[in-house]
Image (cartoon, rainbow, N blue to C red):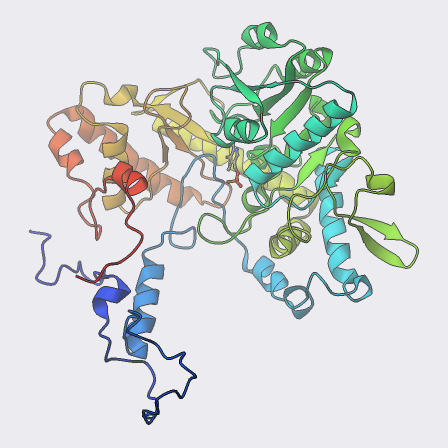
Length: 496
Ligand SMILES: *Cc1c(COP(=O)(O)O)cnc(C)c1O
């Protein structure tokens, strides 16, 4: 059966031209009375020509945006196995809490006495984050994980400068998320890369060889982006401390250990927490994130303002680098951060409770290990299990098949699965990284596993390369030139 159609539509997946291509200037969603043409009526401010707005009737306009929204895959549409992204279900209860009038309709410039409840919510969330990590302080305002990294490195720089100890280097393992070296560079540091060992962890000997008086910090992700716990983390922490450097932990993968490990016990100095990952607020096109940073005793004084404290007349915000905030490096963001995200995260935490969080991280790890174990029947796991929150495979199982990781991922789309993270982390060849989270049922994971196993068998049977390269067949668009899309984007529509 040919998949071509007369209209270009595929079933009820309807082609969606640009709104400008659909519109006609004479059409409009509203009827306005004719205005008599009185010269000079607008004091010479009349429009001189057309301004190229698309002309559509209201139903056409509604359909355009509704269809576009349906092309956006999200966790509410199906299983979203992206590794390192923690695409877990976003409970509707958290959404409801965030929409409460007293949270949704307040303004950051309102007098503090009128927003005591909001300040209490921020403070309570901060307290939970400190309790869950065992750390001494928390900076709530960073707006994302990457922003939290910047916050952490700025606190570290402030602490070093306070000691008159300017250092230039930040050490980053090869498997790190791209934001780590980018953050260090943005902060003016020189990035030195640390190789991984054959077990997918930091090569401690190589790390120690690079640790000297020029190193300001180590940025280490734990559990790391191979889905593994850095088992020598205590030794790493003491080596970093002995060199007079600080230990930044990328906590994006906190979902694997929340409620089970107090990160303060690991000897780290600061760590960002992606509320939108671990604490289940919508992200990845679904909404903004938040990346609060927890800090150790030795970094606490340098944390950014604002922070909430108990004053005489109630809760109040410390907004300036005076008094107890004298050493603060300043601000990360206008106002107080992503308040709506904080409310969702707090609602999630309170509805789960400590035991629920413990259960969630346990189930997330169990699910990942289920994938690792079952998929190892046909795919090649990069490292022996057990893993933490995500399962990592590489492309050895596709050797000599003519099928690449990309082809394999595209074939998954025709089967109704969003691909996993591909080609990351860089420490293995042709990576396929999947993080099921605790949200998925065994039934969902079983269909996913059966699908991937059958695709793997098909690839290995030989002669299927062309078929794989033709995927995806069922989507409105097939394969896009992703490089050109990034390098030569067409951002302005020009009338033919
Ligand atoms: C998601 C992620 C980040 C960046 O977080 P954002 O909120 O997307 O800025 C950093 N490190 C790791 C390991 C991540 O998975």
